[in-house]
Length: 547
Figure (tube, rainbow, N blue to C red):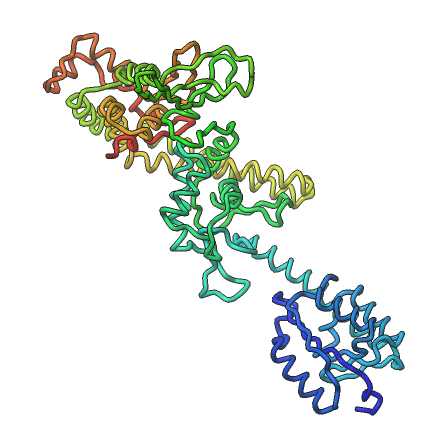
């Protein structure tokens, strides 16, 4: 080292990026230790040690920019760094350093193995800085190629979604996505609550956070915006788009948390008008009914009336929010009147316990005898599935032959892939139907048997869920609640009316008498034959009956 450095003051600058560009570079502490040795061996005066953990592939490093400004002010005229690429990996920052050196603003740059002076040929520095910039460009291309290849293998190539994690036993770049044992089941329970249609998004998140202890990967509470994103993320039913917005969709190899039908059901729920929710008091039926005149949500409010004799009475009224039409003429209705109307409706779907027991026994026997119809249905769906697979193979051949553009191919592939997934789920549903068919029927009959008792003795939550189970189109007009019963309950209602019309007694009866009075089982129970529960809106008839 020559004596020309005796009057130069240096900034010691160390940088390390957390990204793959610096995978083989020494840590910041290691750089500083080695550079201190160089300064000591060559009598270089270091006025300050500067360091930052940030990529240099783009301009904008705060510590680096501050250092250049301080050099312009004369606080130092030399830079001590590990390698020249620690200063710049992009042409803008590289140009600044090169120009300052040529102009003499920077009098000396000392690296681990080389010195740079204003009197040197600038070509060598330009070549080294250019190589650093080209390295970043090549790395970016290679990284994108690797991520795309990983997506084509069925693994989402970047961060994992909440409820999943990377397999720690795999090396970087080849890590599979597996269930997070601490969070997967919690997210599934949150989806289940959403699918009932009885809980607002914020309430579900509150339950998961405060009762179940759900936290994100940083052990912090999950934000409401994050949960909304989760509810709308196709990753959870097994598909993902990469890169985002590219239109390139892939079938993931990770375990889906929900089905595609459940995902579409949730999207419909998210698209509904926000239900009006009281702030200070809970009510049983808010958000479930709409005004028959203007279509707005029916809300509730509590009023307190004080009388001259000192008595205080609390009243609850349901009325139109009038958000769609401020001039809506509908008046309010007392909660007692509303509950009386609901009670009259649920009495019409009540079935005696003895009848339910007999019906389930017969149903179980006849379900076993319907195996042939089930086999035909499976065969039909398999043919449809094979036809879709053939179409997918066809468009692949057409794309290879240049008969389809990339845009046409992606559009048709997405459509056919979704159809394929739906048919897969239909096949799965039919194949599993034999196992849970009787269980569903049992839940429905239990609902019909216990509904009156539960509505009378249940709490606000029970009453609200029972009303929502009755029908999706609940309209309040002129003080009267109109209910369009769900399909299974229509059959239950008809059956109940038929039993009462024939003066059926509620005490135990022999199975033969039931059969004689109701006729063939198929005509009496059309809702319990295959397909009775295929509603657009799935309903859990068991939940309201849980004590």
